[in-house]
Image (tube, rainbow over all chains, first blue to last red; front, side, top):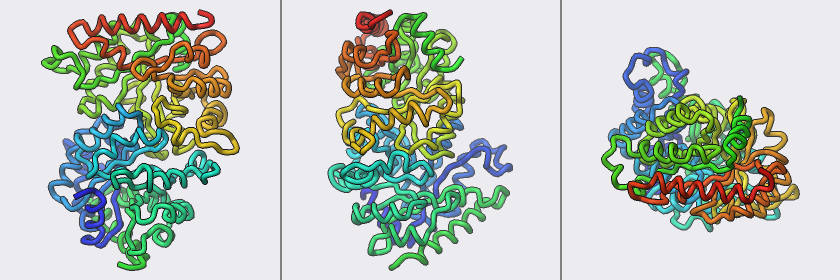
Length: 273
Length: 273
């Protein structure tokens, strides 16, 4: 089963559009984990087990593992999800982008080494730099379109006669780049107007929406502007608000409570469920 | 001493603009290295030692190490360069790009974990996503501008009223983004016309130019269009043509011979040396 089918199945069977992002900042981990042999893995494992029935995907952010010299703990985390929660696809948030021969190595990193079901990529280098990822037909390739950060407009809003850059990326992602039907987009929750514009361009293409929670994105606006007619179409990701709901020994329960509230808030805004 | 000063010193003291890129593809390594305990490191170490007097920088490409689960061998390679060839700066080719909190982790990966002197980054997310890198004032931040691949024009040539996207990136990189004076650009050797346009925009800013060798970039055109008035301003990088000049036990000597020829070809095209 390919990534988008797996995602649709998780949306339906779990009745959730929520994705929990795993951004394990060593400086923010609960103190009692410091003595664990693999504290980053232990932290992620507890978060995963406490929220797995509430999510349609997990999204580990590789930068946090790489900065901590903890690629092994990322492998362990993804392996834990695959073994214990096999219905939940794993999105490796890596935002890779490089020329073809190097892109092939990054694709292998994501899909062979880490066994991710999907990976985020950067479109700046154009189509041929995406092909090595797209060639993994059963995997998802999630292209940055309009990101959640304050400076997103610096480059992504540049306007040509074909529209703004993010609109052009959306149009290419939905047509000429989507040769294997495995392309998705990233659009930040912090920009609901742009999300509506992109939804109008890409039809039912699933969109990964980070930026609710710590970044302040508005859930109701995301659903109103981004959901498809059947009330799905979105992978709404929260990381810090869930992960760091408590920094005590109750962090996993606190994460679950926050995730539950967010899932329910999202579901209450869905037009049809 | 900051990265650009180190680079200028290497240009002068070594009389070379050549950079050797370390893209160790496990499938292409000489067969006799297969039994080594760290074949990727051994390969890179031999290449480094055979070419260190011919280059102004080394540029390891992290994707090749990551795909092979060999981050430790990347650490060993960079450590080897720093200990044995301390005058040669190391550019970590990683093309990172993410929102601020994650970008801070990628900056830490490049500069703290790997102790790189510079890192390549992707400008798609805008200025605030570059700030965590720029804040390392002594390090170089090398922004993708016009890449060497065939599809570079898909996105980078989009034209707005302010010019093409790569021209806008060049202008921002040379002014509003360069708050700490540590920005450089990437421009592919395969596009000499674009290189000339970018040089006209950015003044004396150093430019990393991949794409000579296996990708077919023309050295004379690169120098004519990209060098500054003093015959420097360029980091001209070759990877595959040097690394895989031979796949026998003589690979390091063959790499040296290729690098020597390329350095001399570059120097013969410099207006003043």
